[in-house]
Length: 215
Image 1 (spheres, helix red, strand yellow):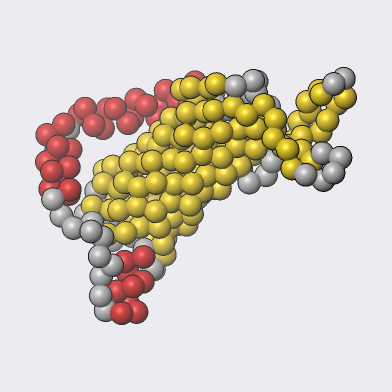
Image 2: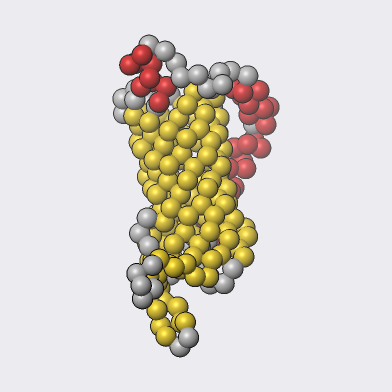
């Protein structure tokens, strides 16, 4: 099932780009020669660890070029820590699995209307996982720190509720490209996304009558 979801997203992603290379290239040149607008997003990504659903929350800020290409940077954190155990000096210690990462992202909007946007998204995650616990003195300790690099393709749909706010959903897959450390968890997983999109430019324009300078 996991492999099927990943394969489906990758095939659709590549087929849309390959089928109309000239169209995408022209849209790319035209969009990035225009003045961008700021965008701000909150998203929740639900995935699975040990067949248990876990939630990762993220904040993203970026630039939108003519509602065709969006680029930016996100900060993501495992919101509900996943409980586990480690053995230290023959003692079993309950710990929480913590995972956080930065994620540069890129999105291609292949269909848009006044209210709807359908886009293909990809983001890379650069972060760290660790086991956290409190020692006998109540101090927070981290154990078995593990560096991770992930790749997350996704298909997303956004709906603008009013000119200031929108909501979105989608499905994707988190694939671990690099892992260096002693944590044995499998972080590769199907992902489904729920997000709130804030149109910063529209809010500022409504309040002040001016655009946010993006330069």
